[in-house]
Image (cartoon, one colour):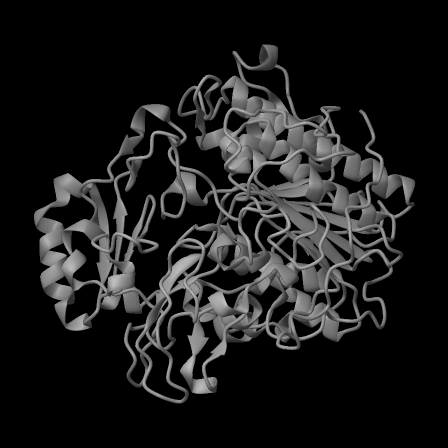
Length: 566
């Protein structure tokens, strides 16, 4: 196994945003127990429970039938493997991530999608990079409602890997990359911009750990995902090379498999790192190198620091490997419904496994492997696994059928807008909730055209989320209607993908969840569990009370069962 050199990645992360954002949290003490002093949390986005099963056991017609993830296999030999784990519903990256960090469902944390809707807020002062139109906001006035955006469109410059952060090095994106004028605004607080860490309604594990004196760090794909810090931000070190920026050469960066990123590996399409099976690995490697620095007691840039009590990152390589169709290169995804990976997906799984090997070696070299719990999970899965089931449908979607009843910022009829919230799910916020029944009738009348699987509205929405609306006991963020299509149907005509996530299907939601430490007794847990249970589990592992999390008190989220440290 090749061991990467630790790479300093540029200027230090800015501590404030022009005086409007809270300062990054300051270290004061260390949390932990005699056995567990650190938790390394890894989200391999898209990785199903069956992907872990297959890669650790081997499947016919792949890699000669031999296992192909030796480092994940090593973790699995002393881990609890939760094989019936489900993500948040919807299974989009934003609620998927925040459910892991808060222990909450969308009902409580108020997060449904990175692009969603809120009836109590107003549009940004400046149109976002993705087309969410600017609009008026009257201080302490009646809100107009707005689409909410927490992705690359709020960057100062989403074409740049550093998000346009003033004075930042080539790769050093973070909270300083956020353009406050592109943030939605809250009229109830004088039209102040709503930063990502303020958007969530509940606290996060980073907040609890920081309040107890712990040092915290996270790396993710957008500056907007600094939301993980929760109210007050609560991150000592946040790093986010923008995944949807233009691809650039990365001098000095080499992947864990030895591929150089000093020149662009795949120059056929450099409009986004996600458009290439090889370029995405270079983007992920930046975050991997940040973790290696942090294991060595440094910040992501290489400055002296403590090893965090809680740190981690998300991967995008497997997700890209599952769904990308790259002209001239090939198609990712699976060979069959049993989850046997095609060669391009296999290469992404092998790459991610190699990076985990580097982390394991680094933890051992630092002498902290035994006191670190490694948790491997995913924000979301990917649907469908069975390639025969995929069906594009961007023409007859729920939003197109009821577009006249949607707010203009959500309507497909808006030629310049960011568009409705539709992937392999459709979330519909209506301009007037009074049209719910008539709109449901339209959708059901056109069930075949939209590939309707199940529709939720009224009590079936209120039960699991909250009643939509702005009146007493109503939730301004709850969709009026949720449509889950038949398995494989995606509301898109894109020919660049043949899988998607966001929906409620098993392939969307059943993800890997592994809790590993040399002193954990190996066990497989088959009872239903949820990624939301990761949050209270981390607190308990670090010796902190789980009920410090709002979600534990409000929703009764419990820690994962059967974790026995010898």
